[in-house]
Image (cartoon, rainbow, N blue to C red):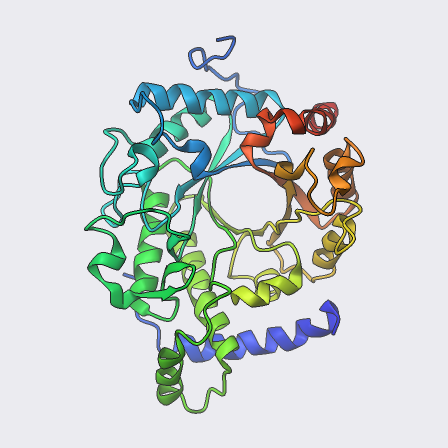
Length: 402
């Protein structure tokens, strides 16, 4: 079934599902100026197309550094901000809650292991506050990247602290072979996630909050089947399948966060970055069609279009067109995630090695499609990776020429 054919079906489902759900919702409870960072008025807060860079928790990590001080972190992040600004980017999307923990001062989540190597051990400084200050100095927008459900994956973090939600309230979580997540069907778990987002939005000078593509894990199986049966017992007329019920749980969270951010009195956008292959999102209970087509889930969607031009399974232009074919709701922006991390590698059956201007070409393809309002590059490390150097040079020269 084609995308345009499934849109009316999905829209009908989500409108029905939300009407059922909202009836039972609980209320929402060097030359580098590390060192000389004054931005000119012209540079401050550019309002052009989105040109973002994702900065992962691994790239922000201080746990293996000999010097874990605030000054060392400032110098490290200022270098990142300077590099991104110099290359023509205007927005940094920084991963501040990777595992139900915080790279900021939080009353709800323990300190992340990313800064000290030990979850729950504070670094002695507020990393997000530092990053907001540096981005402001460089005239860069900053968005807080949050993993809403993830507590632990593939044994990371290695050890959870006593204040971790799974240690304190395991009943709010689900364990699978791949790790631990907050239970999307649990109202208290949802409350914690929402309050955590509002804590960031109300306390920091950020421009947006972004969720990535971690929703229900692909190996969920029937782990949450008892909760699903309990839902059916409470709503015998809903008729929702297990798959649709999971999508509804995620959609409730997104719609509540969207409303709370709209009403928090701060100009903070809410975005989601799902899988780039539309079909793959179903495995994660990610109802991307509704998020695009119905206003009230997000301000923008940024699918991860991590494909080469000649990927034999799914090429970049076809993947981009699939998203263009969705009738975007008024006010919903569409960005594209570009795979800087694949540049110069043998990914996508070696097709990234055939040319050195793939990212540049993909950027130009996006510019010709009116549906897209910009892009985000995954991730920062590609800007300093020797294997990706030619690709990044060609892309950034194109950005500077516009």
